[in-house]
Length: 320
Image 1 (cartoon, rainbow, N blue to C red):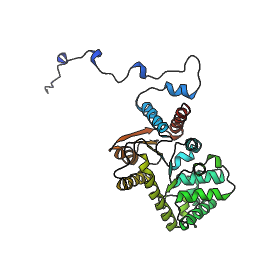
Image 2: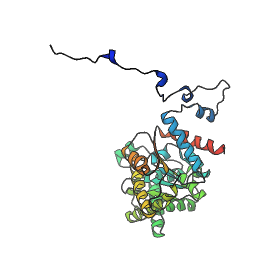
Image 3: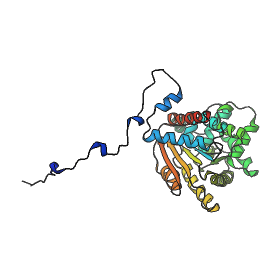
């Protein structure tokens, strides 16, 4: 029979709970609706616990509100954020003067362009893949590639080219929901960072690889030129891009620091996505803030998390 030894619990040392530091006390806890029945967003926001992600969410909202009109706020978007209906909320942040630079991956630009021009987006991929019609919408491919080719000829970036095309196009089905249109109205720089072969407009007969490369590379330079303004209090938000925007941001940041004596530092970097991915964590949240600032990951469905953040920022701006 094996001789198992057992720890002698009678010799354990305990400590009085009054001497133990606590992370949680009643002042931090959530609370239910008030007896007066206040149905406002402010009442809901104030009811959240001041713990973990709720505390982080409050911090990011406060930094965005503080930066508005004072420091740069760079908004980086993946396509899913646009197609689940968040454009109108992001437009409001633009009109409130919060956003100073809008950076889109290719799919975000496509979804927003389609909503503005045609009033609909987000096709059934599985159904279209079966017969080879996925991504083959004639108007989307023709118009966006025409805009990009014209932009390349004129020395424009891809974002600027798409903005100018929508402005000249005349009739738009839903301009009031488009972030591209809102940026044009507010004079906010827009850059589009394409991955050749990843977007449906690249499979169209009108696609021009040279134009795609020239306009997207120009936008990379423009993003790098915007980043120094993040220094000492700016905010960069990565909303729903798991690969492209985190990679582009990291390279643009090193260009900015190379040209500007190590700046920007001291900014808030926040990643909002449904899952925690490697690249957003290391390329947006962790590495860029090692020299100062704070990195935060907020995890949740875009269509729930981002409205909470936007409403909280607007509330704080209204309270100024």
